[in-house]
Image (tube, rainbow, N blue to C red):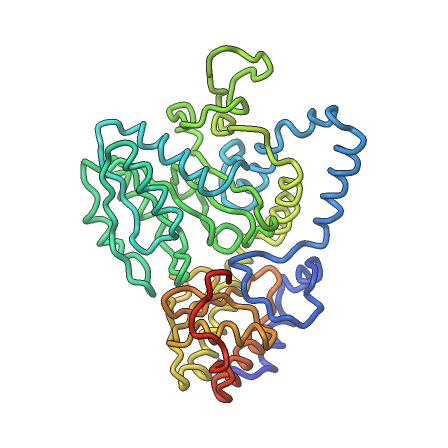
Amino acid sequence: MDLTRAAAEALDAADPLAAFRDRFAGTEDGLLYLDGNSLGRMPRETPAALARVAEQEWGRGLVGSWGSWIDVGTRVGDVIGTGVLGARPGEVLLSDSTTVDLYKLLVAAADARPDRDVLVCCADDFPTDRYVVSGVAQARGMTVREVPADVDEGLDPAVLAAALDERVAVVVLSAVAYRSGALADVAAVTSAAREAGALVVWDLSHAAGAVEVDLAARGVDLAVGCTYKYLNGGPGAPAFLYVRRELQEELRQPIWGWFGQRDQFAMGPAYDPVPGIGRFGVGTPPVLAAAAVEVGARLVAEAGIRRLAAKGRAVTGLLVALADAHLAPHGVALASPRDPARRGSHVTLAHPAAWQLTQALVDRGVVPDHRTPDRVRLGPAPLYTRYVDVWDAVDRFRALLEDGGWRAYPEERSRVT
């Protein structure tokens, strides 16, 4: 592989997604933003979309605008589902937070397996997922079976298979590991769990908008995910949940709110969930936030998830090659799967001074993030990150290692950071 900057520029010149970069704010300021897997950039269209809802629909239309707001969760859910996730219409709902959506689907799935008393999760999964699993298990008198995973390579399917038996009700796993970027075999895990009689709830937070998940084609039953990473919905943007059409009438989620109620304005005395994906709604939808999510999701759908996934593999492949050539000689090790087919759209590098290096990189115009114990995580979101951005970021990383400038930074993260 040609690792020159000129080669990176040539890749950008041939990139079919290159024009999308100009549709995001801040891309002209020279900042090398490699943290799109934490918070995506703001689409230039988003402020106008928010202003339209605020000034026209709310400011002038007032309560009369509820005619267009009432179904915002299902409408934007369909944009995400059909345009990004490979789901069918009526299978995705925009609602609540990822944590709340996970709770709703986990309890609904456990209720659907009443004779089983074990919940399975991954010991290295994102904390909120493990916390929700533990809380549901404690409340229901169930047992949590945490399966180990390699912090760099992710979960071994054989280890998971060994944990599946007739006691397992639900499995909760991330499609892309938050720390390493390791990509799970969604179809194989879903199939293995189904053979054991269990349901799987997939967390797509680090996958949606960056890798192909093809929920319908892979037979996925349940999934949740956030919209502020690769879907560029903005900080605190509402999450989405997915329920396979054939399961919707079987499952009843535990938070009985009036937006999941049949004939909600009849204000009836008893809860009777509406048919379809709407039964997984709870309260009034976040109308303003949904407008921002819709802009970001439509951009991703327009770009095409297959093209985005292909670029994600290519741009992270360049990052890995550059790290091997320029950072490994200074003690930096790859902490993600080397095979691009087993990796999402971020790359993690290990170094004992990872926290100091992260701080120093930010001051040199490179924005990564830090993950315990000693990881620098680089997320070149394929929708707006150039190959030359990756080249320049690694070049600044190399210079930092050579001049030792990172040693001037605190060794430990403060509580307020």
